[in-house]
Length: 465
Image (cartoon, rainbow, N blue to C red; front, side, top):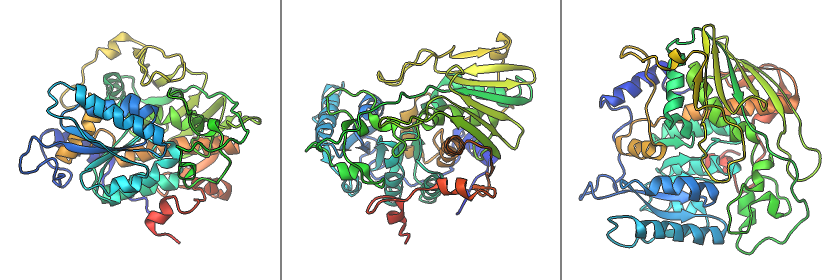
């Protein structure tokens, strides 16, 4: 397994600061639609892959509002959702102030066809978790820039392949870890990284849990749904609505979020957000734990089988202990020898269907003076973003790294996946973060990848036997 990456954490931070001053980090290869003969009137032309609640509630609005981009294509394997998304985009542009003419949006039932569209410069991928790695790699190989929802992948082996290929192809990349574009999260991490609470000793992460349940009876496959494609590389199983998504016009949280063939549960669903912030504050964005242990309750009845209540402890080489528990307040608490800082979304909700969960203050500390401390010009300043989708679009234009790089996305997701493996096995595991292997544990190693059902999955794309 190739675990090398071209920049160290220090090099990345230096490059990010250089980018602010105008130094080139990525090769200046900009899509023709950005620097065409009549630029700057041309737009970054985006194709949306996956048209469910996150696409319509977050990603499409987040892209459409910026004039440097135009959504020109949509893709979904549910024809009802596809038609709905096409209308959503066309109506949004028709209502947008200053819109010169109606926007025709191409619609595709298969992402591979969208990637063949020559007018598409970049893609936003808002699919179920088991459908992340394949379209990311396919888009990178097709020369498209990429925005993808979190978590990056379902398995650690997929994550390593995604990070390596996206970077090798020099694609502009962003993952939906939008907390990196939240002012309070960046400030909290800068304060911790610059020693305002002394030597960091412990990080506590609070996440919600999902309910058990789900109907198991087999149902006819709706004529508007390409169910075999929806299953993708996962095993072929009978259709039931609670396995996929609602066929109603509403966009409540779908059943696939609670089935570990398609999602690992809240440990990656919310965990990829908070572990990413923990890594940012710990200075471990490009590594992982050296030991991890966990326990969890797993449902024994019904269709939904992701974890319930749980507790995970991960030790890092710098001595910091990261503890993840569903009983902690939803957020991230950094504990140092001289105090603590807590950060969360406060009252913010990303989508209307977000699960009910108790947030603490958006930003809090053991001493208010900590939060009023100014980060000096010679101290560490983390990459700055105020708008997550705009940050990605500007990365496409400038070829500078976005606020979250592919390797950082992989490392935060992989820490969550390691937590899931520890919960499944219920014991302490030793991990080598450089080689990305378990130490003398074949049972744990077997959970780093999954068998892929043909003709789907990344093995086909990478031409593995």
